[in-house]
Length: 230
Image 1 (cartoon, rainbow, N blue to C red):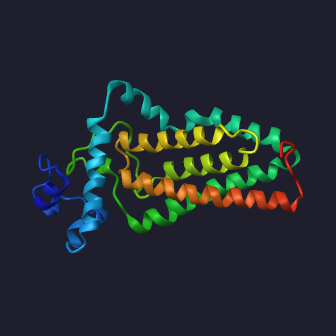
Image 2: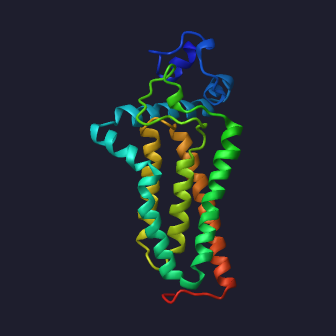
Image 3: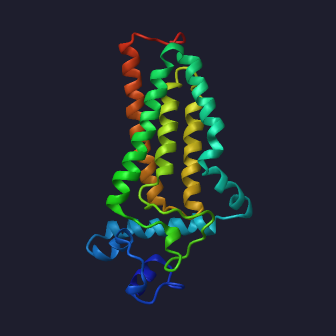
């Protein structure tokens, strides 16, 4: 246990023996692969970056702002606005674009929450406050940590909507990516995910969002539909 504390730079406040440590196979992995320096380096930097974001780079303003940024209900007006843009631009086939967008989000949530998380079983940092230094700024939740479903779902939306609306609003896609990145960053800041969790969620969300945006373009070609601005 002391060895873990030393590697994570969190000797103070650590449990005194392994029996006191919450069962977290993902966090124990560096101790089980001593011959793999690259893997150890990744996990050490994952926790180091977590402490920077969660503690060293904190401020009273971010303590107020970022819990709101990562609250999905705050963004309902944005979701409605994006759906309105899709309907306005795609008109008679907007139902297909919106349906594929919903399927993209559902796929991201299914893969992250119901497949990967139960398989990896990484414990959230906010559940490790007895072992690690963690500032918890929101209710912790009961699910596993890897990957971040918030990061997955918001990047699915950002990539899918940014792609399908790019012919009309080229400026929109980078703004949506920044928005999704802010949500992912907030998940680390409030103490409910490690950086590796949100990085994996971002990558998964990008892949799923891009897959469904390609599917949307393919189906639109099948319908022989072209936006007037082409």
